[in-house]
Image (cartoon, rainbow, N blue to C red; front, side, top):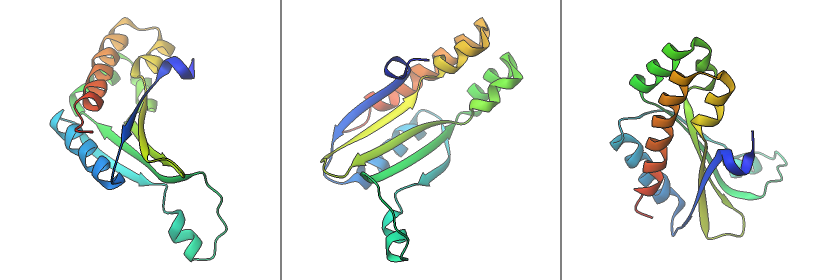
Length: 140
């Protein structure tokens, strides 16, 4: 696996991080994906207020887990072990001193290569194209 080749990343100039998240959610849903969970790793400020010492180099960090049940079923049908990579996820983050934010994901074809399965690779390719479309169709 090659990080530079197997992770898709886009950079967006933003005014408000929450607006970027909202736009991502809308695009995900328009592509018939269900958002199973959003992990808010950036609750650092809550931890600091509670007296917990935290050192981070980001302002915001979210992990957005998504699933399309049809695509998921196809992946698992191709190889039952493929479920270890489900649901797929986007990460959305903003570094401390930046006005831009980043959205990234691991290419489904990267994990599909591990299985050496043509049917699995075909479905992973379709999933990857959908995820790229989500990023390209965002308003930012």
